[in-house]
Length: 309
Figure 1 (tube, rainbow, N blue to C red):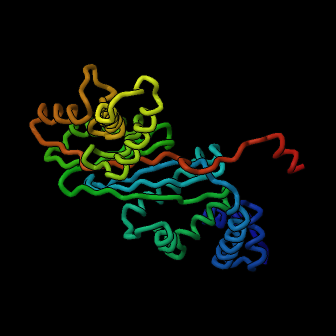
Figure 2: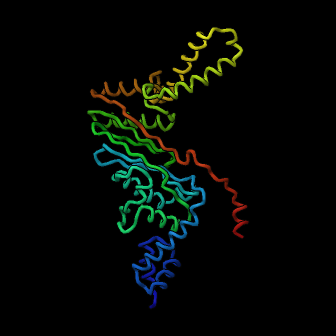
Figure 3: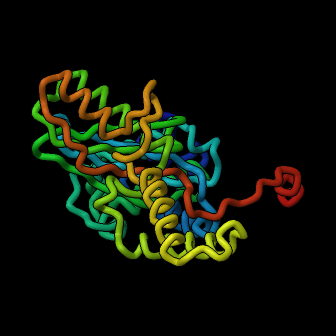
């Protein structure tokens, strides 16, 4: 059967695969469009397996918030290069992943990858990911996601530097007006900038406190200024330093970065609530930073070109 240019174009629009790959798929399946799609998917999966060993430490973080603002999802999808991370097709895919996560009941990545893809129920999420890998030509990975909900309030998001950092902040409030949303957006920006580990001092585990006390104690005993001081005095010094450190790692106790005075985040939120005549209680936050904890490959363009030659 003769393969026309319009058939190749149609298949390419359906799959996003390259022109020559589409022509080959149609030739090998006698022009049967459904079989050609399956052919490309199977070959796409094969290509994806070859690329799976390559390090994907770039990428973007995206969020998705429900229409009523009460539930949200945040996802990180990795690529090999920052160039692909800025690709519109890649960004659209990550946005679709975030939207599906927000509606999904999956509790982990494996369960999510096994779900039917929302854009085409004949594929799983894993198969759609493989298709994207084949189309774009780089290894990609849906690394992690988290969901946040707040039935008695709202969830606000903030994306920094085009997706390098993403934040969700959930707060209970009886006012979802612009002033409250702006306040929570500022809190989300604080999370992005200052990277707190906990919401408040009450959330800090005893294990963390004990570990930090041991570190501070070791530092204090090595300091010549403390030589000969009673243990009780050193203990008091350590507690003072620990409390100061907790203010730095707990969001609500952190100094509010946009404040002209010395108020902390909790005081800032309370001031906005008072001015708006409502209550605002920050319940939690999530912060994703692209590639954190992943080993990034050293780019050597000259070596890469030489290897290809």
